[in-house]
Image (cartoon, rainbow, N blue to C red; front, side, top):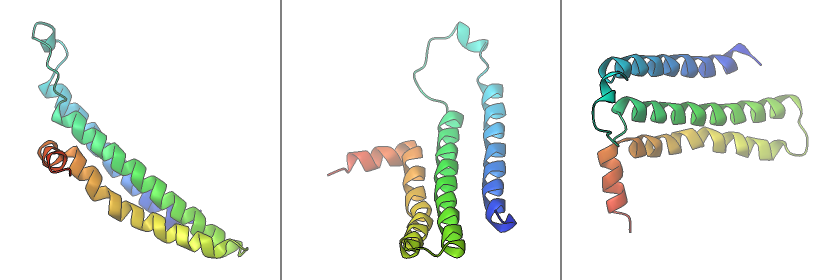
Length: 122
């Protein structure tokens, strides 16, 4: 693969994994395990964990959409076979997929917005 195809995946992964590490250290400072032994059990997921799930979902969505686009474009560029027109459609669809689905992932990761959306469900 070419450098300009790998750099976006590396940047997305490294920066978001850095965010996950920051969330983990922040969560472990505010919610240490030894403090919760004498406290009643809370069934609420901490904000750090919810944010980590949203970040991981965005990373997975980006890597799958970008990866499918890169693979289909490389196949189109180097092997112009009978399925080359189909691969251009796949590349466009996967590029649009991240743009179309990421707002929904962010909305479902926000507790109040998710409650409003589920309440307004027809």
